[in-house]
Each structure stands twice: as C-alpha cells, then as structure tokens.
Length: 288
Image (cartoon, rainbow, N blue to C red; front, side):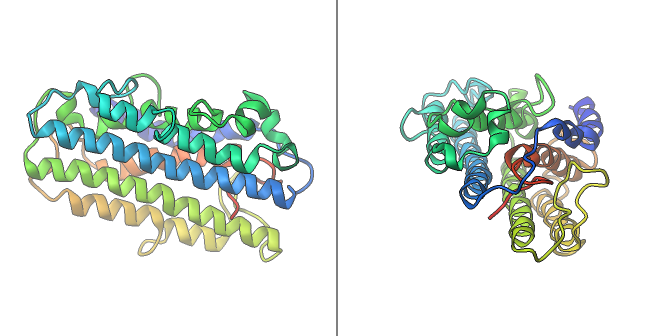
C-alpha cells in the first residue's frame, strides 16, 4: 500500500501527457458534436458515481457479517447484487452509461470525427449503447486499475477489508468518506471544465481549458475553480477527506498524506480522459 502511494504520486504528475496523442479536429465541433461531447463527459461522471455506490453498498453490507469481502473487489465484483448493480444488462451502471452516450452521439452528424479516430472507432464510441461502450470501458479501468494491475481504487480505499479485517465504525466511516469525497471531486472538476468550454464556444475566453497542453489549464477562472485554496474543487476534496478521517479513524494501511495522494490520483485520470472525450475542440475539454 505504501509503495502504491509513492507510485501514484509519480504517475499522477505525468498521466495527462498521455492524452496529447489524441487526434483533434481542425474546426470547432458543431452544436450536435458539442452535445455529444458534453453528454459523454456528464454521463461518465455519473457512471463513476453510480459504480462507486454499488461498491460502497457491497462493503457496507459485508461489514454486518464481518465479511467475506472478496465479492466487493474489482475487477469481477462476484457478489451477486453488486455484479447486477454494475453489470446488469438493463439497469446496471455500465448499461445505463452506454445507453446515455449512444442516445446523444449515435447519429454520425453528432459523432465527432476524432471519436472515429480513437480505438474502437465511432461504432464503439458513439453507437454502442451497451456497457461495452469504449468510453465506459475506459472509465471502468480508471476505477478498477488506474495505474495498472493491483491498483484498483476499491482495494486501495477499502484496504482494511481487502486485508480480510472488518474495520471499526470510525475506520469504516473514514473509508466511506474518502469514496464520497472523490466522487464529488470528479463531478466538481468536470463542471469546471464544462463551464470553461461553454465560455470558450461563446467567445467569452480565448481557450486554455486543456489539461494536456504544455503548462496545463491556463484559463484563470478554471484554475480558480479547480485549485483555489478555499473554494477550489481539489482543496475542498482534500479537506472533505481529512474531515471524514480524524485522528484515530485512519486505516493503518493508508500512508501519510493519503488525502492529497488520493485526490491527485483521481485528478490525473480526469485530466487524462478530458482531451479524449472533448477531442473535437481545438484544445479539448468538456463542454456544457
């Protein structure tokens, strides 16, 4: 666990560089393409929240019987109720996300050309209404193995249970609080990007919303939205985790500075996926 915290801190500093190879369109996306990109961003954000609720509920239920906890773990989620919650063909989180994306992006007139150039192409990015939609699969890997095998957020956050031990109520509250804070952070940061590009397409700002560009995000309002020490999405997430995990409630398998490490790790994945989802814009980002 301690080794992961070190690896995550290093990986989080460079992950967004991977997104620079995503093909971009020469011209601004049309209104329909903007709607497709916006829907993908919001749907994936919702999917992360929905899947997290399925996992958290599994651990909460298993704690009542002091385990076992193996059914709550990624990537298989073998607990029957949890598997259905995530992978159910009609009401599962994956299926709902795929259907939402396809509804907004299926028509070729609304599918950005840069989606067709990505792995899976337009068929898997725009038209696949199942849980196998390529964007859903990407987001799935960000939850289950953000930095490679054995780095799944469920095992890392619920590390007490992952070690076969039932946590005290205080430790359980801390773990659950970490999940809630990180899910909220994903939504808050996505909104920061959405507002940035909504203003960009209105001509209110010159750009600077893309985290993969040299120097990262440069739009002042967006930087404030994400990083302001008092109101920024990232500092608020760190504060929320620390509040949920006062002295005496922190799992022994967490490392020092865990709040910032978890937030940085999640932020790295958001920054990596943002230009891939909004690749239809010259600089790339979520649009509202």
